[in-house]
Amino acid sequence: MEDFIKPPVRMVGEDGNAFAVIGRVSKALKRAGYPDKAKEWQAAAMACESYTALLGLVFDYADVDAEEDAECADNLSHPTDSCPADDDDLGYGDGHDEECCN
Image (cartoon, rainbow, N blue to C red; front, side):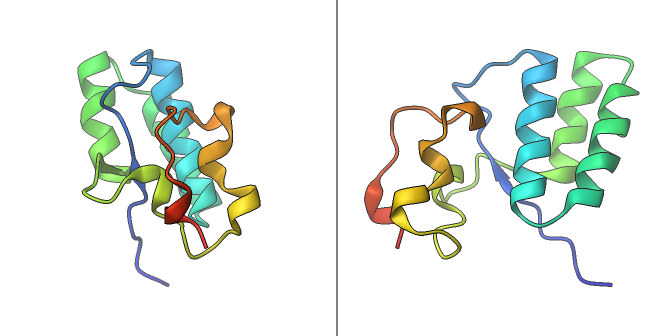
């Protein structure tokens, strides 16, 4: 079994709605190649009894606001013309830097 590496997820300045948080972490896990972890995350997140518990759980599955921008974390896995940071549905802001992509 390979080691689980938490994908970076930007939380600061993003929609804090519980469902938006669940979706953002789920998409990050899927993009990082962990579809089973995404399902596990969704089930655990939906079972949380409070918003505080949900936010605490985020740290178990994601590297929250990592030093490296979340939008540039997968810079080695995509060409510039299809950077996931350009996809508005992924919850990224307008600050995407094209230099992060190859």
